[in-house]
Amino acid sequence: MEVGIDKMSFFSTQYYIDMVDLAHARGEEPDKYLIGIGQTQQAVAPATQDVVTMGANAADQMLTQADRAEIEEVIFATESGVDQSKSAAVYVQKLLGINRYARTIELKQACYSGTYGLMQARDYVTLHPKAKVLVIASDIARYGINTGGEVTQGAGAVAMLVTPNPTIATLNQDNVFMSDEIMDFWRPNDSSTAVVDGKFSANIYRDFFKEVWERYQSQTGRDLNSFKALVFHLPFTKMGLKALRDVLPEVDEQKQHALMDSFEASRRYNKQIGNLYTGSAYLSLMSLLLNDDTLAAGDELGLFSYGSGAEGEMYSLTLQSEYNQGLIKEQLPNLLAQRTQLSIAEYEKMFDSVVLGSADRELDITHDHAKFVLGGVKDQKRQYVEQF
Image (cartoon, rainbow, N blue to C red; front, top):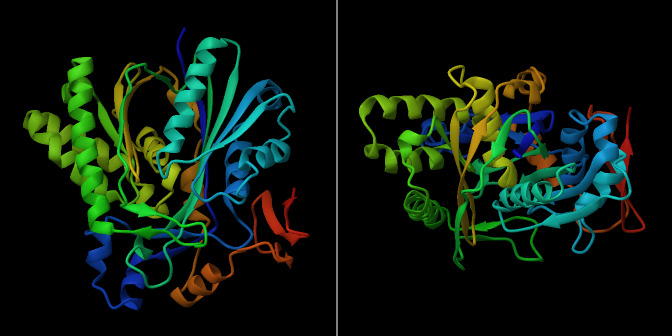
């Protein structure tokens, strides 16, 4: 029995900033961000959106009533959790009307946990051939105003439904992974923004990829010629480009060009959304599926997942014949076209408006056009609202 991703859906906020504007505001040359980082725009989260609402908004667009009744597990991957104890998954279960007999759990390991959740879903469905599992990777990347990491912020959620006989792709049983305790990125409990050693973290990412890739080749007997494309975790898109360039000399020039073309397709949307932490690799996968018109049934895709701290994993997916049917037509292009551009002053004000702590607060939700929003905090409880 084949098990894999049957449906995928994406959500991000209705606001963004342009990287040229940010560069000018920070006294930098725009090409430092556009080329050196590989980003053109960045999603900005208003106070009325958090990881719960974004995850629910993403999943709601793809789930049928039958799916909601049949889902047996909700796995929520995030490093931007809203509570130190309560799982974001159980909030989503209620908001989406998923049956109460589903398990709900939240996972954390920096940007990596979306992949672990996906593998747990695959293995559960393999053992329970009639099951469906909802996996959500949702995050808001925050480093702070006028910090070194500011250009690699972003916000959004990817939802994936894992089932037998999937529409999009099978998740193959060829995973190779490794972990090491490294302080390249972290967020202390008393901080609302992350701490990162940017250059060190970028080097660790590349080192992990090369070692995991070599181990993957050794264990599977496969090489770059085995794959139509490689998909990378993209906290900023230049990072994945550097990793790909590290291994391109392993194949001939024609294959190098083909892999580069696919990589460009896979980073198109990440360049406009920014860093999704746990969802970055899977937005990149969606971007590849939607923008690479050379893909075909049976193509093998390699995916490298990475989470600071640090953990890396390599595995493959096999495309199915109707893979585009598992995606929502025009979802991402429409989302990007309908966003509102903020000035840098407006972005800074919105950044500071995000609900932190447990003090009572009522939020103005009239300007948020999403179905699920955060209405505020009352008696230390987050108040989620379904608008339509």
